[in-house]
Image 1 (cartoon, rainbow, N blue to C red):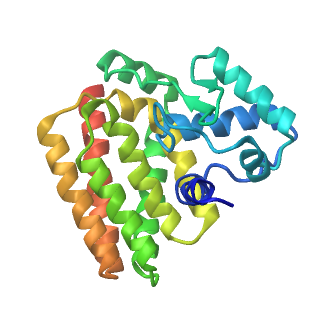
Image 2: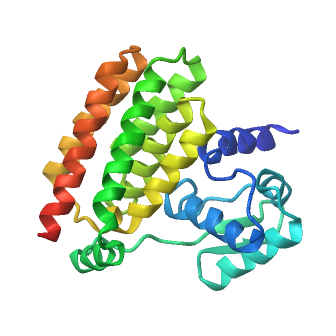
Length: 249
C-alpha cells in the first residue's frame, strides 16, 4: 500500500466507519445506495471529494463489486457523483447541499409528523451519552488530533459547507466512543433529522453560540470530564431543538 492509499484508508477509517459497515439485509443494492447517500449528505465526503476505491468500499459494505457499481451508477444519474478517468481518476462527489430554506424546513417537519419529537429526544440521548463515553476513554494522540481537526474545520467553514462539517464533527465524537453500534446509531439519527437541520437559516448569533458549545464539548472530552461532556452536549442539542421549534411555530 502506497502513501496515498494509506491516507485514503485512514480517511475511510476515521470518517466513514459508522456508515460504511457491512450490509445486513437482503436488499443489498438499496442499502448500498442508502449508505452512500448517508456518507454524502452527512458530509463525510463533500463536494469534490473522491470516494474510496471500489474494492475498499465493496469490502467494507460486504457487497459485490457489481452491486456497488450499480449503486454508483444510480447516484451518478441522480447527479450525486461522477466518474473520472486517468491516473487521478475515481468516483467524485458532485452533490451540493440545498441552500437553507424555511419552506423546506416546514416541509421536512411535516414529513416527520409526530416522529419529530421522538427523533430529537433520541438524538439527544445518543449524542450526550456518546460525548460522555468518549470523555471517559483514554484517547490516543491521533484520536485527540482528529477531534480537534474536526472542530477547526467546522469553525473555518464557509456558510455553504457548515451543516455538513457540523455533521462530521458530531459523527467524530461517536467514532471516539469505540462502539461501532453507537456510532452507527448516531449517523442514522442524524439522517432522520438531516433535511430539517440543513434547512435551518444560517444565523450569525446561533453559529457563534454553537461554536462556544462545540468548544466546551471538545474541552470536556479531551480533559476526560464525562459529566461536563454530557452537559455541554445536552445544552448544544437543546439549543438546536429550540431553534427548530421556533422556526416551526
